[in-house]
Length: 176
Image 1 (cartoon, rainbow, N blue to C red):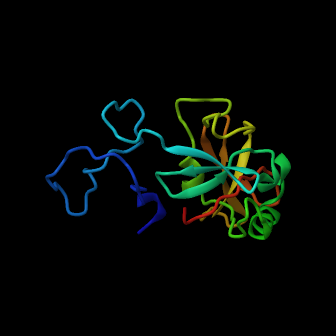
Image 2 (cartoon, helix red, strand yellow):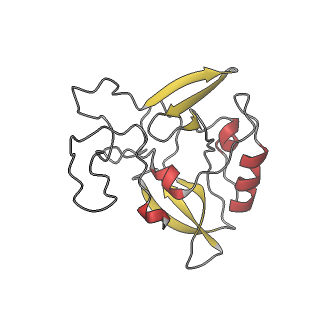
């Protein structure tokens, strides 16, 4: 299965659809989140927490944990790095008592974008100090392997960038 076909459905609201129109369809789940729904028991997707004196955000839709602030140590103090150094930085990171941080893939990075916002295209709170610039993903561009996918948080758009360029990073970890 190609990454473009993966749909994160953990915790997404049910649509009420019970008929399967096409084998494997996921019409029983509604794309997006609880925004605007009044009958849902749990309308909160992002949970802000403080762990070991560090602020993190837990995404209930994906099960990922993110650093809350874009200018703290889990984001290289808000300073840009080239792609290889960004990957190394994330893998070597100890933050909020965890050592399993990594650079997110492009789909994970796009999952925290709020397309109803701009400059930056991410909710603040819980995500603080996010610059409206390009952030690295771990995803290499298939067409030119010297490039990787980045996400611009000004408008929430993607681009491919030479891995030798310096961009910002926001680390992530699994298993929440």
